Image (cartoon, rainbow, N blue to C red):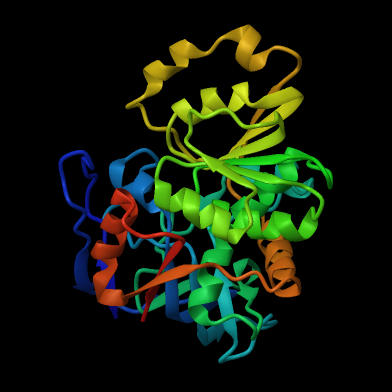
Length: 341
């Protein structure tokens, strides 16, 4: 099968991303696994984290990609959960132990043996991918392959972040950074909290314009002050500056939820601007988001279908994976990016 391989760590300040095209064997199924013929694969900022070594892959060469939509081509199970030809999605959560306290208490995202698609196991930048049938999801007919792919990570992790804010209808929500995940959070929040107002912080004028077009009531730069203090803010950036600035825009008792698997070090010195009285005092909270659970994926897909939430997407041919990744790195496109096979 055709695949694109990451064979080393890149210095993204100096190098252009160049995954290697290759012909490799189709995966061989183990017990309770399905083989999926890939139709679409989303391109996520986490891929940049993997490529740059901020969250390094478990092995090289590896196939990246963890927002995968395709059709089941083969099944190896005595009690299959799907049928041949079913259209399914595969998300960041590839497997967990299923036995630890975290798994048994509904917090499998914290499992010590959590493995991630495209980081700890081969992902979706290929013609075929295999996975346990317990970690695949039926895709509703109302979504095209390209529309469904970003729901599996950008949407699911955005949903988890939104739930962790504890937001109530009528309270004010902020989003700092406005890429694939944040634009889906905005669409979801407008439906779940119709009496709330959403404020967006973004570096680029195009992103701020996009946010206003989607229904944000205000959009400004990362360092701007909002007209009113916010009950909760979700940070989707890889930087530290937005974290510090967001804290200053929270009400007393407000919560900042950081939706980022890693933070870059280039602006870590900005943390020196963190002032206890201005940014943290009066019981403000900072909470991180770790991975997703299967329940997050399932619940968000249900809500996306119910409210007809579809991502704004930029489509690329499978062979243009490097162009998609470099566009993501340099902010040349808006919304979510999807490879079509």
